[in-house]
Image (cartoon, rainbow, N blue to C red; front, side, top):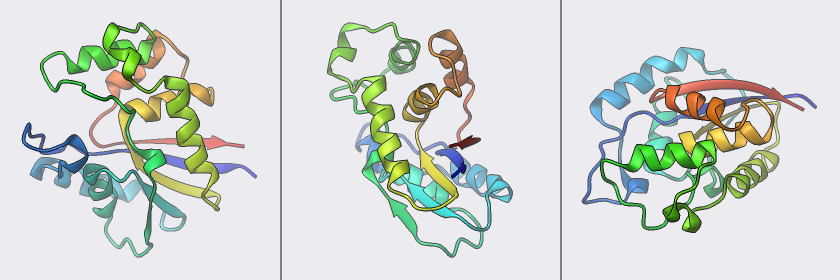
Length: 173
């Protein structure tokens, strides 16, 4: 069975040092941007989301969404314990994406483990059309694993070019 999978990267959150990133809500601009994206979503199919608030809210912005959303932790962002939220966070994430680890990465989930976890979430959903609201790093790791994006610098360019929100469509067997 060929499956159409629409990967929805979450919209811009209202980031705060006072809250955990998984609890960040969408910013006003992020909510507006998410609402504008939804003319591109299918009217049928399974809707799934990371449990992180910003991902769920991005998907919930779909006008006329009547279907329940499957919330699954396998669609959460790459596990990065103790990652500081400072000026260097984008650079650290980019080096993880392109495969140039730094000492902090040794405690992070590997790209292979993140992609495998994400694939297990996909495998648990019945349906030929799926929309998954998730996060840039784990989406990129999965796209590398299924051969849509090449590893290394191509993956880095892909990840760097993702918008908040963004929609990437893939067809996989």
